[in-house]
Structure formats: structure tokens, C-alpha cells
Length: 482
Length: 141
Image 1 (spheres, rainbow over the protein chains, first blue to last red):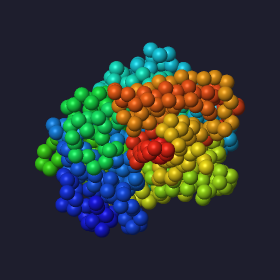
Image 2: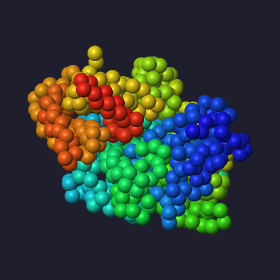
Image 3: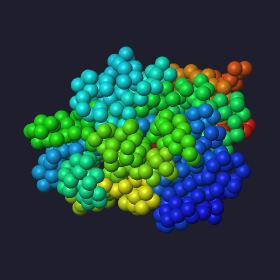
């Protein structure tokens, strides 16, 4: 067992549990936390970061980011990279909502321009973009089409009229992972995916109209095309039932592998398989399908977003400057090259509640942004700010090019409902001038800003420890919740 | 006594049932899962669905059963209040046969609370004694 007392300070905001503290740890466990979070972090979460350090083939260190909290097996806000030659793949290191992620869409409007239209826009978006049970995607896929979505991702959406060719350039992986193989996706997952494509879902997913508040880095903001008071829209959703089912199917299979190979795993939810095993390869191919589904989902929602703006503002989306800034995945495993010691190695980086934060120069970054590092999008919660950051060299050195992904839940859902009423929260937001539309009143209370760790402190820690760099703040104007 | 209870976890929600038999524990587990999405006491019985599942052990059976319940809600919009359910312990594992009685979900007639993503193995517990069965599990929401 490890506890908080085992943490050793590396530098301000960075702490490590050395591998010598627990038998079986192959590498150290490192967390990025400010002084306040070091005091409040629970031993269970630290134990999870340490547990991941036990897994075969793990490289450098097991990592907990500034928004880390307790998850299943792997903590949420965690990163682990495994060597291609002797490492493992774990569905629990990605999570249920494969490629849950965020897309930021720009406009050339200011908050003053949009103010008179806000109520109508939020109403129209709420009507157009489905969420919740029984209100499925507008486009009901044919059984044969689901395989094309799983294989081709956002490209399928653009080819079918949902968006512009240029959109794909600004998506991580251009919105499609090549290793996707729909044959490895169960009928169950496909059946769950068919009716839900193009829907927001519930829980912490949302669509938010925002305005740029503070700018922290003028040069990078200019490269990204952001300026003060500009209106932007953030879309936060993932792979819906399709991804959840892919994860559930594979966790069950991996559980059997771990037993068969008598792997020494400290927690059943860390179920994993050697990278070269059939089970791992099948999971990777299925996970890529889930990721492609999520990029398609966000692509379609963005299309209806443009349509809503066109209808309400009576201008076309092109002249409104509705270009994609970027789209990032928060739950994913990727095959990447990273420096480990003095060598460059191919590793499988698991990011669970973590954002890729590649620093300047990496070829994976869209050309326009390559000199300043990739855009990192960190959403807040209802009524709080969200942030754009940039990837850094420090992230490449220390965290396999990764940083935090959001606020991180602190209160349980029922705890939040005991503390807050939906009316209270709606009123609070209204006072700040934020328009809110939600499907379920209980979700409003469950998702109360007070139920989450303060996102401002999360991005500050990410910035101060150097694993990403603050660029701009976004303030909410209108929110649509599932 | 309640047919099921919910308990807190940070990110998700736990379900706990204590019953006289394994069958009732599986029934109440399904009911508790559906009740997260909509109030089950309001569901009308207008149609029935049959389910058959074979799994290698009891934990896997619970995992597969709740997965099926989530599938029924998400793909067929089927919600159920009453259940007939039988579990057999056979050579190749456990077989569950069930008939569910309920209705098609419709936003005009039924409320919507939250979405259930999946069941997890995390902290899953099935304690079966002679006249008593205690089941605990967590669903990701």
C-alpha cells in the first residue's frame, strides 16, 4: 500500500512515489498537483497511479495529471505508456467513453454581436441536437452504414454532407484512426451506435457558446486565430453507446486473458493483455472504431451547429467564420514515438482523462500550429470558464506529451443533488447572464459547478509545471446539457 | 424494505440488493438499473420481451444480464417493471432465462433521469447463502 506520506517533492507542483516504496512497481508514480490538491488527494487515487506502475512494459513513470481522481483500475486524469516490444494494452486505461473529447469552433462574431440572438440560438440548438434516451440522432443510419462510420470516421460525415473538407485538417488523427476494423466490433456495440450517431448524450457532455476572456499568450492566440471577446463554441461528447459497449465487451475478454496468463495484476479492473496478443490487437482495432465514431459524432453536431447559426443569424456559416480550431481526444490509446532515456521508442500511450499536448515541431500537429505546439482544449463545467492551452517541450520530456483534460469530479452525483437544487443552479447561471437548457433537471444539480474541482486551478497547475501553456480563457454565454 | 438501494461512488453509482433468492437479486438489479433512467413504478405493462443468456460464472452472468438490460433500453427503447426470471447452474456455466414485461420508452409519457453507460466489475459482489442473496455492483453513468 502507498499513502500520501510516500510522496517526495520533485519540484513545485510535481511529486513522486519512488518504485522502491511498493513491491512490484516497475517505475515511479508521479503526480502534478498544487499545494491544495496535495493536501486533499486521497490515498485510493495515489494507489491507482502506483498500481499502473506494476504493469509489464511500462515506460518512464505512471503519471497523474492535475485533475486526477479515482476511477476504475486506472485513475481518471492518468497517462501510461507501454513499450511496443513487451508492454500491455488495457481497455481500463482508456475508459468506457472512447474518444470522449472536445471540439472548438470559431466565429468572427463578438459577444456584443451575438447577445440579441442568444435565447433563440440556445432554443434552436437544443431542438436540433438530440440528447438523452428516446431522442436519438437525426440521421438514422442503415445497418450497412455503421461499418463505414467505424472505418472512416469524420471523413464519412464530410462525404455525406456533414461539414467541410477543411474541417478534417484540424482534428486529431484527421478524425480517423487507420487501425480501425469494424469486424472486431460486436453486433451489440453496432446496434447501440446506430440510433445514437449525432447525439450529445447526458452526464457531463455539453455544447457551450462562449466568448474569449483573458488572453495569456498573444503570439500563440494569434496563430490559433483567437482574440478577446470573440465568440466560440465548444462541443464536448464522445462515442456514445457504441464506445461504452466496445469497452464493456473487451474488458470482459481481457479479464479472461489475465487469468489465463496468470498475470500479476493488483486490481481486476486493470485487466490487460500483451500488445502482440490477439486480444490486445482486437481491442485496438475496435477501440479505433469507437474513436472514429466519436469524431463522426462531433462532426455531425458541428454541422447542425453551423445550420443553427445560419438560421438564427441569417448569414452563412462561411461568412460567420465558423472554422474548426481543433478537436482533441480525452480517452484513447495511441501508438506514438517518444524519447525514453536516450532512445526514441515506439510506445502505446494510454490517456484516460488526459489531453495530448504535443510540443512545437511534432509532425502529428496540423501544419499551421506546428511552430507553437498543438492546441489543448480543457473544458470547465457548467457556468465556469474553459481554456485553450498549447503543448510544450516539457510535456514531451515528462508526460509523453500529455496534460490535464478538465475539472475532475469531487462530489458524487447524489452528493451534488443533496447540496444543490436544479432551480438554485439555473438561477445562479441566469444571474451571470448564462442561458441554460437541459433535458433533465436532475442532471443540472448533478453537474453543479461545485461538484467539480476548480478548473482554474487545474489549468494553472498544468501551466506552472510546464506540461502545457495557457493561451486563452473562454467564458460561457449559453449551455446545452444532455 | 426497498427492493434496491443506491450507494455513492465519486464518479458513478452503486446498486445494492438483498433478497431471498438469486433470481430475485438479479430481478431487482435490473429494476434498479432501469430506475436510474426513468421511474420504473410508472411503467405500464403493454409488451413482453424474452431474454436468454449463458455465461461462464455468476459474476459474468450479472455483467451480461445488466449489459442486456442496458441494450434493451438503448437499442429497443424497451423499459420493464415486471420480470419472470430463472437461473440454472449447468455444466457449461449458468443459463439465465427471463421474460420482461413493460413498455416502449416515449419521452411524452415517461420521465428521463440519466443515461447508464455500462456495468463494471469494480467492487462487484455476489454473496449467496441458503435463504439470502446479497448483490452489489457499480454502473458507469
